[in-house]
Image (cartoon, rainbow over all chains, first blue to last red; front, side, top):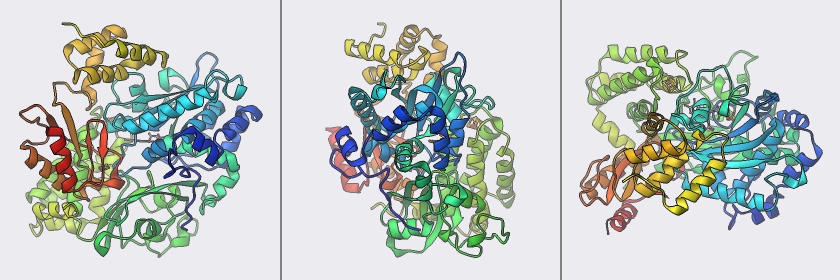
Length: 456
Length: 158
Ligand SMILES: Cc1cc2nc3c(=O)[nH]c(=O)nc-3n(C[C@H](O)[C@H](O)[C@H](O)COP(=O)(O)O)c2cc1C
Ligand code: SF4
Ligand code: FES
C-alpha cells in the first residue's frame, strides 16, 4: 500500500538540509544516539535492533540485527563497522540521495551501530565518483565531532567512536563485501573466499560488520520510535520485512526518482503513482525490480503460488505488479528485491538489446579470479553480439543457458550469480524475441533505436 | 626527476595515514592524491607511493591496474564520462555518446588533438533517476539535453 513517509528523507529539499542545525531541529538529531549510548548496554542495542526487521538494503536482504549479533568480542583484536556506499549496481540511485541530503543520519547510525557491535571505528566506503557525497559526509563528521558527538567521549560516554570516509577507484566488484574489505586495506578489490566471514575476520583481519549505507541510516529512526514500532510501519511486518525504505524508479517512466515509503509498496504504485506512468503513455513491457542483477519480470506475469504455505499465496493469480515489494515476496516470484530501485521498459524496448547492454557491463566488471565467471561473462557477451549482428544460431541460444548454469554456484563471489541469473531471466521471459533474431526477423540496428528513443 | 607531493598535499597525506591501523590502507587514497596533482600514475608515482607506505612497487602497480579510475597514461585536461549502462541507455545515452563523438571528432577512449578533452564511457554512476547523464571532471551533469551537452563541451574547449 502506498504510504509515503519521511523518516530518512525529512531533510530532503530543505535549504541546507544536510547540515547539523537542520538535522537537530527537524529530526531531533543525535538525541537518539545520546540516549542509546548513555542508557543502554550493547547487548540491549542488538536485541532491540533485531526487532526492527530491517532487511539489508544492499541487495541480499539479510536481517540487520541478526548480522550484528554475529559479532563476538575478541580478546585482542578490535572490531570494525564498515558501511557500503559503493552504489554500483546498475539501476540503483538511492544511497547517493542520503549522503547528499541527509548525511547526519548516516553518522548517527554509525555511532549506534559501532556501540552495538563493539567497534570504535566505522569506515564508510564511497565510490570515488560521488564527490559531493564524500564532501557532505566529511562535513557531517566534522560537525558532529565539534559538538562532541564523535571522538574519545561521545555525549560524555567513555566509549570512543571515530567515523572515516574511504574511497574506491572505479570498480563495481568493490561493492561485494569482501572485495570492499580488500580495497579498504589497500589491495586489489578481489573478493575473498568465505569462510571466514567478515564477522570472524573482516577488515584488517578483525571482526567486522558490513552494512549498506541505507541500512545504517535507518537505525536512528528505528531506535527513536522503538524498533518494533518501526517494523510495524511496514505492510509486510509479518514476513519479518519491516520499516520504511527508499524506493527508486528509472527508465521509461514520466517522473523517475526516489521516494521514501513504508515497506509493502507495490510495483504498480511505484511506477504509476510515484513514477507518473509510462513515458508517452505507452504500455508497460518489462521491469527489472531492483538493480541489473535481479531477474527481469514481464508486465503480463501473474503470481503462481497455489501452495497455502507460500508467502505469496495471498496474491495467487494476481499481476506481479500488485505484489508488495519485499525480500521474500520477490524471491518467491523467482526474482529478487535487490536494491529496491526498479528499471522500467516500455512497449517497443528490445529485450535482446537490453541484455546485450547488461552483458557488456558484466564482462567489463568481472574481476577475473574464477574461470566460469571470467570466461562465461565474455562468452555470453559474444553470443549477444552475434544475436545483434544477426549471425547467432539456435544452438548458441541454447548454449547461453548452459554457460549461465555453469557459472551458478561455481564462483568465489555472488557476482557470478548476479551475471547468470539476469541472463537466464531474459532468455526465459523473452525466448520468442530472441528466436526472432536468430531467424533474421529482427535486426540489431532496429533494436538500438528502440533503446535510444528518448534523447532528442 | 623523482615525484614529490606539494606541501599541502604532504599534510593531507599525514592526515590520511592517521585514519588507518595499517600503512597499506593508505594506498588508494594516496594514489588519488598523487593523480590529482599529476593527472596520471607514472612509474615515478608508483615508486613514491611504494616508498612512502613501505610496500613493494609491484603491490602498488597491481592496485593501479585493478581500478579503472587510475590513469596509466597521460589524459586530456578534462575528463568527460558518458554513462552507457541500461537505465541511461533507455533514456538516450547511446545518442548522447554518438553526439559527443561527432562534436569532438573522436571516439570514446580518445583525447582531442589539442589535449583538452578525453571522452570515455562509464558504467552506471548511481544517477539513473536523472538520466541521461555524464560526469565532467568531478561534477555530475544530469537530465541532459542536446543543448546542454553542446554548451558544456563548448565551455571545456574554450
Ligand atoms: C557483485 C556485488 C556487488 C555489490 N554491490 C553492492 C553495493 O554497491 N552496495 C551495497 O550496499 N551492497 C552491495 N553488494 C552486497 C554486499 O556484498 C553486502 O551484502 C551488503 O553491503 C551488506 O549490507 P546489508 O546487509 O546492509 O545489505 C554487492 C554484492 C555483490 C555480490
Ligand atoms: S565470481 Fe567473478 S567477480 Fe566474483 S571473484 Fe569470481 S571472477 Fe571475480
Ligand atoms: S545507468 Fe547511468 S547512472 Fe545508472
